Amino acid sequence: MIRQKNSQGHEFLYQQVIQLIRDMSAQQVLLPGEKLPSLRKMADNLSISIPTVKQAYQSLEDQGLVEAREKSGYFLKVVSMAHNLPKRVKLSREPVVVNKQALIEQVYSAIHQANVVPFGIANPIAAAPTDKALARNMRRVMTIAGSKAINYGPTDGFVPLKKQLVHRYLDFGIGIDMDELVITNGAQEAMAIALKCVTKPGDVVAIETPCYHGIIELIESLGLKALEIPLCPDNGIWLSDLERALNEHDIKACLFSTAISNPVGSFMPDTNRQQLVELLESHDVVLIEDDVYGDLYFTAKRGTPALAYSKKGLVISCSSFSKTAAPSYRVGWVVAGKFATQARRYKRALSCSASLINQWALSEFIASGEYDRNLKVLRQRLRDNKERMRWCLQQAMPKNTRISDPKGGCVMWLDLGGEYDSQKLFLLALEVGISITPGLIFSASNKYKSCVRLSYGVPWSEQIEQAIITLGKLTLLAKK
Image: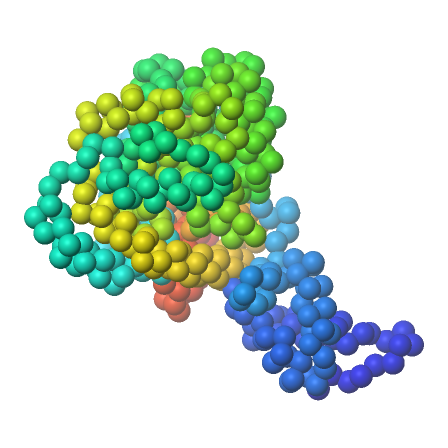
């Protein structure tokens, strides 16, 4: 029991609660990602008042040791030191012709092997699977639709699903005409269509760095050049670097993760996103926003799509249900705005239409309310997993390893230090049944040789924690 103190220079009761939580953390009685005792339970156990406990928890939150989650309580965080976050890289001097497909193909074939710990695959839905709920909705669709379910769907998408998406954008004050929205086979096709609408082979496209390797491969396949804009580990791209690049190069389009970035997990605040749109539209440059992780935020609220800030109609928004419902359904979309006519033509030429039955099942899933309920659970599990993984990595990896602190999504970025070779670590890990993604494929040039991306989009278990310990040991063998 905490003893009552008088007011003559002694600690206040709430300070003793703070020390108790610190002790529980130090003794690993309470681990990062785990929930603190409720206000009432802690007050009852210590025979003190609920306001005293609340004051202590709020103080811990101010110190960055715990985080409050709406209607969920307080949770222990990993202590982050600014100097332990990934470093800022330099702005690229010139655009580059991309030549990464062979390396990406090699990595893909390895990380998709069966029976490996899947740190190499960004599949957040694995943390809160939707298979049972989707199976129920699929059976319902088969009953309702009958033979219609196996037909081709409209080129631009299943109307009920498009209406639901239009209504979801209205939550941000964004009015979209249904004709501007085209359903695609995942966000990858959406981004391909967007790029084809506004560029031609040889054009320069600005991308963030490090950048999702699928975008890099897409740029290569379309014969475009990439100009890499450095990414801040907290707030998205550095706008000062982008402004300089716009003044020095003939950039036709920018393709950025405007909400949660992959692989770093940074979150661009709304004010920055608005400044980004204003900067690009002042140069008449199109922004293609990759908003695929937008709904997997850990911040107080979701980021507003960049589309909301466009005054010239130069923002094309791309997203999908692959990270929030079902990657195998391959249902994404592009809000093409003034480029909608071209987008529909490219969609028809590339794949005719997306799967009708999958769109229908997702539409039922959303209408039932199950999609949003599962999304809430998914965000919480991913946030818990992030804290657990960061804590485990801090214990297991070399002392000077820099680890990102994602504000959403399902992936984490590690810089092991210049003396380590992530390609070597990738092969060593694979030999013992652990997949990781080496940093080289996240750059259009040859950056990030000492970096790796790890996914915490997994069902957490002792096996996962043991795999991180094993990875730490293997890292010592991966020196150049």
